[in-house]
Length: 139
Image 1 (cartoon, rainbow, N blue to C red):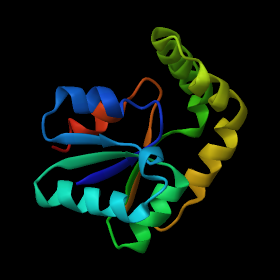
Image 2: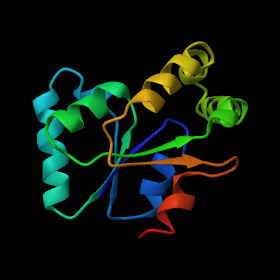
Image 3: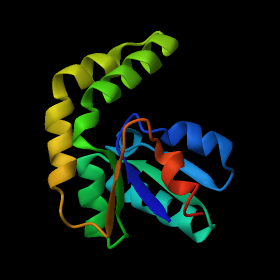
Image 4: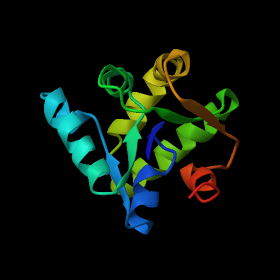
């Protein structure tokens, strides 16, 4: 099972607490799409579930190779909550790069993911929800 999850929705925390789940980010694989596809297929063949960052390049790549896409993203009215999530996380990590990025590019990033139409399912989180709220009711 693969879920492409919008940043700040609890992918890493969920994977830390669930052994059969792997958190994958696009950026380490940016140089080699083939390596990313092979890694995803390897994980799936070994019965791991995947939470992948819902980044437009990842969504396009998954669709190109015929991998099912289930998107989880915040509802439109959660922008301020999402900005607060990033700020809190980045302050805890003492690294404000994501906070700086998301302040400037949130709307553009959100639109690209939201307008992506070639998916198998899409779920919008409600205020206060994380990916765990969705997955704990499915798996």
